[in-house]
Amino acid sequence: MASALSSRVESVRNSPSLRFSLNCIRALSSSSSAAAAVSSGENPNKSKRRKKKNLFEVAQFLPNWGIGYHMAKTHWNEVSYEITKINLYKDGRHGKAWGVAFKNGLPLADAPKKISGVHKRCWKYLPNVVKALESSTDSGLKVETEAAS
Image (cartoon, rainbow, N blue to C red; front, side, top):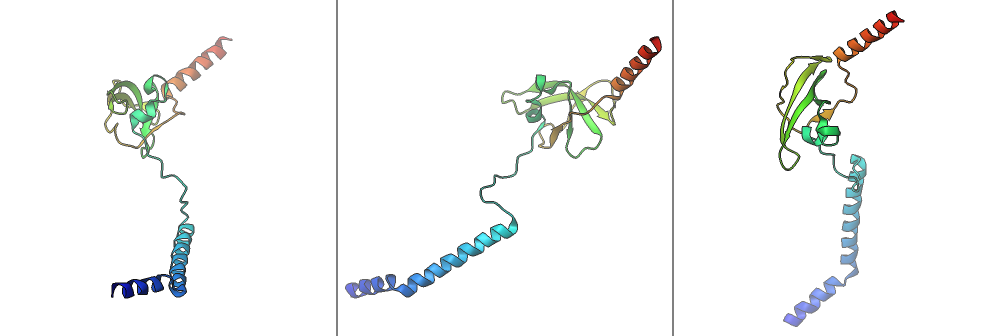
């Protein structure tokens, strides 16, 4: 009985109709998944989306850990902090930060305050922020030098 059963299994395994049907199923399944990948615009070799950075991960590439530079959350409009002090933990990606808040280029307060949300992954560096006070004093100096000449 066992030999009859094993011979039957061998005949089914080697039958060309079974191989043909399995090959058709493989071809259809691979072509449909390839078509789905092409239609959805995904590239299987493409890397995943880049992880956003917290304040310390942005500041680590700036000179002096970003002290004196302007940072803002990505969803803030016309609001930023000028970093005045950073207290880093040992890993370099966590800590505390203090800064002066700016809105439309003008400081909101004279004294720095502790920045909240520094560990959230939504911070960016603002390279083109010019303080209104510096720009007004620079223009005032230019006017005085022109008048003196």
